[in-house]
Image (cartoon, chains in turn cyan, blue):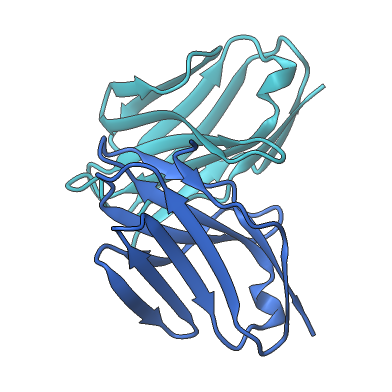
Amino acid sequence: SQTIHQWPATLVQPVGSPLSLECTVEGTSNPNLYWYRQAAGRGLQLLFYSVGIGQISSEVPQNLSASRPQDRQFILSSKKLLLSDSGFYLCAWNPGDSSHQPQHFGDGTRLSIL
Amino acid sequence: QKEVEQNSGPLSVPEGAIASLNCTYSDRGSQSFFWYRQYSGKSPELIMFIYSNGDKEDGRFTAQLNKASQYVSLLIRDSQPSDSATYLCAVINGNNRLAFGKGNQVVVIP
């Protein structure tokens, strides 16, 4: 069966520091991968999605970036965090052969910026 | 108009009653519809998906889809305290993008 892992579970970072969040999927090949952010009192916002290695689409312009160095690895990064980057970051996947399949989420990373 | 709307405020239901949640969407080209459950502090968990008009039942959950009226609903029968959570409606629109509503909080009162 397929599983998705995200780490770390929680992170507290100062403003201006860098960020790296990692997500890996097991038990499938060539998945679609997604990064979402859920801010307090707001809905899920799609940040990036990827349909293959090195293929990244950005949904919202901001100081975040994403990379997919391997088929089942998706990384969210920032060079300098802002206060507004606080939130619950979720990685998700669905089968690469159909974007209409449900997305399944990892456990998330709760990021607090001080 | 928001892409996916869940307008109801927190829903309190007595244990054993039926909880009814509604969701409307704006894109008539939408094809796939999902309900996720999210416990406080946790990630969303898929509980139902529906692609065709009508009802789909899975245990105590029933999803209902009406594409002509552009709404999808979720019924939870015999509500249990463990059903207390936020329920997110999600829709894949005509551009193959998954859009989420803001969610409805359900509180089941023992």
